[in-house]
Image (tube, rainbow, N blue to C red; front, side, top):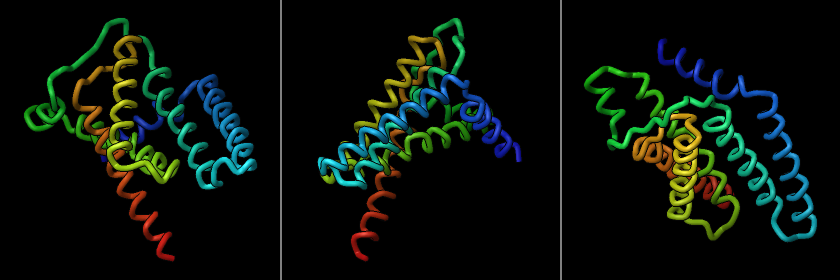
Length: 182
């Protein structure tokens, strides 16, 4: 039950309790993307499914960056962990199950990117998806470091984020194959 409480508390703090300004930014981003995609789909520059994927993709990324970087307070110090897979050492040696839950949440964080990114174009492959996830993850990590708004992790968070995007890509392939068979 403690892990469920941890996840719910984490969701409440990082998502639900975003400031009004953060929610306004996300809504404006979604509105502008919708306007642009309706225009592009109406002119037949992109398919309607691509337009929906673009709207969801950009809106989700704005949400991710706001909740992982900008909604956090300045810690006043630069925080970093350069040791690879330090969180698993803490889980196994110190019994820090909260870190295991955080690792799981980091897998989930970019899972939607793995589903939405390949929906943008038929040319997007697995390697493109995991490369984008790595770029997104390191942008988040370096932003957290330079803005002092979180713990910079050289390996752990990016590994879990890329893993999540890879799993999302496989989910996309599974459902895309199913839809093409019908």
